[in-house]
Length: 339
Ligand code: TXA
Ligand code: MG
Image (cartoon, rainbow, N blue to C red; front, side, top):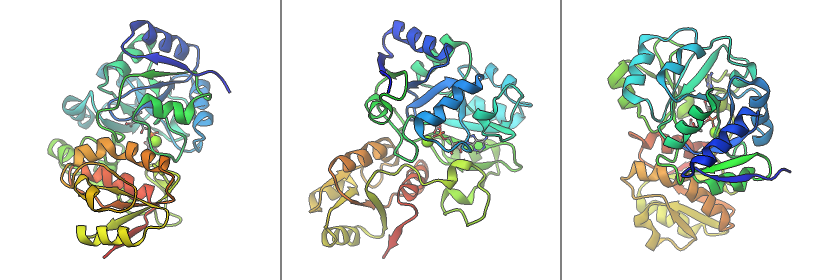
C-alpha cells in the first residue's frame, strides 16, 4: 500500500506535481472528458507495465496513448493515412481513439505485443495540461480495477485504486461518462471496435464505409480471435449480477416488481415512481447522452445499495445509445431477457 496523493486540476501547482510523478515513472489518475484514466509515460515500457499491476489488467489488453496535439501522432505510428487526418480534423480533440500500425518507439507493454497502437487526443483541459507539462504522451486505460465500471469521478478512482497508485488529479465529473469510440484504420474498410461519444453515424459521414465489429453487440464466438483484446473480457460490471430486460415498459415494470428478492432496478426516470424495489435512474428513455453520462455512477450506486441482482431497462441503440447498450450487455455478461 502506498499513500495516494489527492490533487486538484484547478490548481496549476498540482498539474506540475502530477507531471513530476509521471516523469519519475509513477502512476496518476487523470480526468478526461470520457472517464478517468490511469496514466503513465507511454514511451517508458516499465512505467506503463505498472498500470497492469495496479488495475489487475490482463497483460494482453493494450493501452490507449494520449496526446495533446495532432502533431504528436506521426512519431507514434508507421504513417498517418488520409483517413486519420480527416477524423482528427472532425473529432479531435474529443472522445475518439484511432488504431494504426505502431512505430518502434511504442513499448511492447503499451501495445501488448500487437503491431498496432491506439491513439487519442482528449478534449479535457486538465488532461491536455498534464500531457503538455510532461512533454511525452501518456498511456492510460480507464482508472478502475479491471472488470469494474469505469470511473467518472475522482472519488471512484480513489475507491478502486486508492493505495495502489501515486496520485489522483480531480478535474470534476466526466462530461461524456462512457469511454471513447475506438476505430481501427489498420483494416480496410475501417472497423468500429467500441462505440462511444462519437457515433457510428458521425464517423460514416466523414469516412463512408465502416464495418461494425460483431463483438460490439454479440459475445465472441468460442475460439474466435478478438479484433480488440478488451472485447474478450467481462467488463463494466458492478458486484451485483446485471440482467438486461428488453421489452415494453409495462412488461419491464411488472417483471421487476414480481422478481423482488434482493433485486434493484437500473431504470429510466419515468419508471422510478412505479417500481417497488430499490432503483436508480440513468436518464429518461429518449436521453441517450444523459444515460451515457449517468450509467457507471448508477451501477456503482446500485452496488452501494447492496442488491445482488440488477434489472436493467434496455436502452435505445441509436447514436450514443449504441455505446450505452454495448456497456450494459457486457456488464450483464450478455444475459438479456426478452418478452
Ligand atoms: O475514453 C477512453 O478511451 C478512456 C480514457 C481514459 O481515455 N480509456 C479507455 O481505455 O477506455 P481502456 O484501456 O479501458 O480501453 C481501451 C480499449 C480496450 O478494449 C483495448 O483492448 C482496446 O481499446 N485497444 C487498445 N489498443 C488496441 C489495439 N492496438 N488494437 C485493438 N484494440 C486496442
Ligand atoms: Mg477500461
